[in-house]
Amino acid sequence: MTPIFDTHAHYDDEAFDEDREQLLAELPGQNIVKVVDIGASLESCKKARALAETYEYIYCSIGVHPNEVGELKEADLDWLKEQSLYEKCVAVGEIGLDYHWEEPAPAVQKEWFIRQLDLAREVSKPLIIHSRDAAKDTVDIMTVEHAGEIGGVVHCFSYTKETAKIFLDMGFYIGIGGVLTFKNAKKLKEAAEYIPLDRIVLETDCPYLAPEPNRGKRNSSLNLPYVVAAMAQIKGITEEEVRAAVWENSHRMYRLG
Image (cartoon, rainbow, N blue to C red):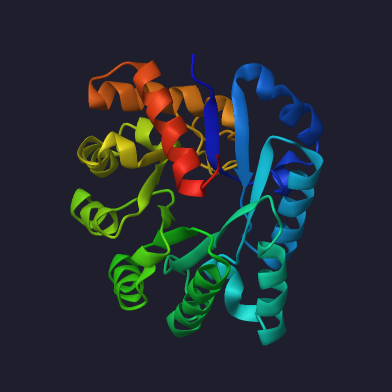
């Protein structure tokens, strides 16, 4: 059976403080053999790198989430660049726009989104795009900044299949996780049916967004088989076909041999 690659996790999160080592040690035995721990703030970037340095099967990304950019200073960009050159850093992200909360202001989010897009281009690493309640501005910035030349993934995809087409036309992969199993996720199920299998990667975004039947609990990579099963049902193919495709896609997206 093809192993699973969790392309987007936050094991640095305090939700894992009590049993992090025990849980991470369990993953390879459960056929979860690669994980990318995602930077979302300066502090989490440090922790993500530390996990990548500690565990052979964990990689990291370096970037600042749109809700965390309010305090960023020019010098921080230099530090982010330095960290992104670490050999097990596979991407710049998660970066983007999030209008679900009022702060920081959209103008501030846009500025740092563009600055970090430029960073990814400079260091030749793919992008991890976070976009929530901000489809049009995300698409507009990615178009103007030629993000398609950089490539990467739109993580935790939450828009329509029409918006998916725009990202796919730019050459991006689409990250899908536990929400796919939710009964009320009609829009995402339609998008998942539409998106070609060779452009889908699986993610947890753990500790968030645990799939059914564990919705509402702390998420982990151990729940990804539920997402595989849901994807197989939607696509009308076997779970092994899903596993094989997304394993290949994840390596291609992150440019791992």
